[in-house]
Each structure stands twice: as structure tokens, then as C-alpha cells.
Figure 1 (cartoon, helix red, strand yellow):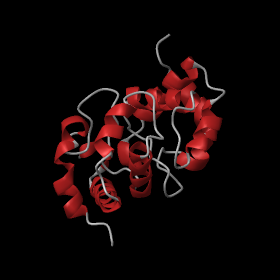
Figure 2 (cartoon, chains in turn brown, orange; figure 1 turned 180 degrees about the vertical axis):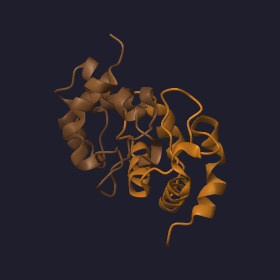
Figure 3 (cartoon, rainbow over the protein chains, first blue to last red; figure 1 turned 135 degrees about the vertical axis):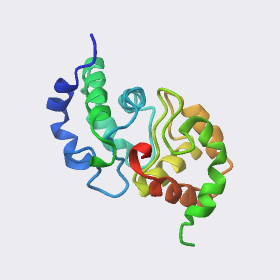
Figure 4 (tube, chains in turn green, purple; figure 1 turned 90 degrees about the vertical axis):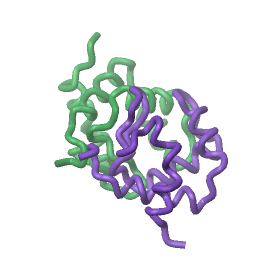
Length: 88
Length: 88
């Protein structure tokens, strides 16, 4: 299935609490996602889901990613990659 | 010591091969760093250095981060955070 940025947007509501409605982090120490490389976003989410990423606030993302399917991850990556970098 | 973006720039020459001279990744699957949250960048580098981050291409960054001091990390984070998001 091709990535679906609109489906990703719908799934992203919970992400916005920390990463911002526009993909710009609301909390120091959390990454901006807007305009990030799509393949990197998918790779990072899969590493959190597999609990391969630790350190810092990784435990938060391990929990968030646990319930995501491969399609969810592809859609979320497409959505955040589509947002303008810097939130402009 | 306060973070020194100029010192970070000097240290960033090796980073540019993958993350771009302007902090925009040259390789699919590698993250853009330009305009990223400074505290997040420092946290991520420390997690790679401690080998807490695995999965994806993390082994590359574990190697790159191994020789970085805390000051190097602070300076690199300040430098990349200072670059305009999106490389503009």
C-alpha cells in the first residue's frame, strides 16, 4: 500500500501533544518532525516499536509506537514529511 | 561551558557527508538536522554514544558519536539547531 498522508494526519492527533500540531515540538528535548525525511521517520518509529531505541525520552516513544502497524508508520511518516520544515 | 555553535560548525565537517553541508540529509533514510531542537540533538547524540540507540542505521552513528565529548555534543547541537529549517 502506498503511504497515505491523510490517514497519517488522522493518526497524528496523539502525536501533537508533544510534537506540535504543525510538527514543531512543544517540549524542549523533543524533536521537530515537520519536513523530516520520510524514510528516516519510518525507520525511527520502527526502531522505537522494536524497543531498539533507548536513552533520553525513548520509553515514551516505545509506548506510543507499540500499537502502530507498518501501514500506520508509513502514513505517519508521509504526513510529517509533507509538513513545511520550521512550521512555516 | 556554554554551547559554541562556531566550534560545532568546525566539528561538523564529517557529519556533512550524510546530513548535508546545510543540515539537509543527502541520503534517504538519514535525518535532516537543520533547525532541529537543540536539546533533542544533544540527547540523541548522547544516546548513540552510549549505544542506547539501535536499529536502522544506528550503528553508523554509534561509531561517529563514540569520540565526541560532552562539549563537542553541546556545540554540534547548537550549530545544527542554528541552521534554518528546510535548508533555506
